[in-house]
Length: 319
Ligand code: ADP
Image 1: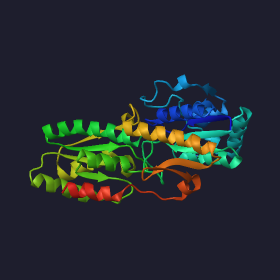
Image 2: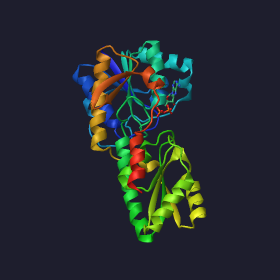
Image 3: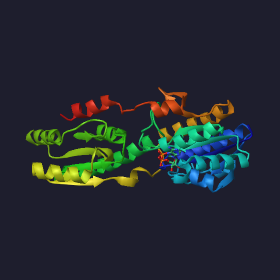
Image 4: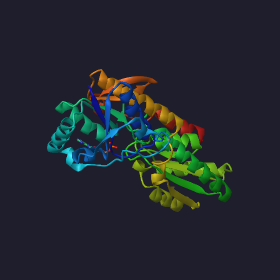
């Protein structure tokens, strides 16, 4: 193995840069040439390749987003697109590829592995919606960003004695909502993985008011419903003053947390090790804190849920 490449794909996540840095520096440390592919699979098809040096990844570990840029690429979903991507990699003498991204990006990576290009994936997405790993890169930062916002909203909620509905990201996964609800002391949390009743949310709100509670925060994962609609429903059925905040993309940006930088650095280095060992078609991850290589096939066929004990705990702590 002489030359490897790295790309970031799908939604950006804080910590992707730390992972790119670790891939580049570990690769060079082991005497490999490292190529950066810009704009994910789109850049691969357009041959947006550039040699990476130790200096190319200087001063990036603390930056959010991805210095390699990211993109979505429809043509790469077709067998012709995948074959073309494979040919580009071969043409440039690349012996192995590291793909940093989410589930969709891994599906593309699996196709390249099937075509014969050794490919390793690193889970990078704020949603934490990848099975078989402790956490995805970016999740911890996104939770911390949302918590900062919740703490500020709580100040206003307390001062004005209002009910706040806060919608956080998570189209298929309630992990962000759940962790933010627990860490932010929310009264209720609505996530896509658990059936919920707005009547029950109302009962909890009314119970709180009856015992003198002046304000409440209800966390909604975007996949569980629209915060705005839920806010309207609660206002209509309780007569309380309800305000809605949709946090949106602020959760995607910002400097990565120390935890995400550490995870990204570990996984970047591990991905290079796996390629050097001849592995392919696997995700580099941590499981119970230890490094683990998980077949993409296992990742695709394993159902995942957030830790539902946390869900019970939110409800228990906000009686
Ligand atoms: P994420 O990686 O964050 O889940 P996407 O689902 O948007 O993000 O996927 C990123 C890119 O990965 C897509 O634009 C496409 O190029 C590629 N991709 C997604 N799904 C597949 C698939 N089933 N087969 C091949 N490539 C895919």
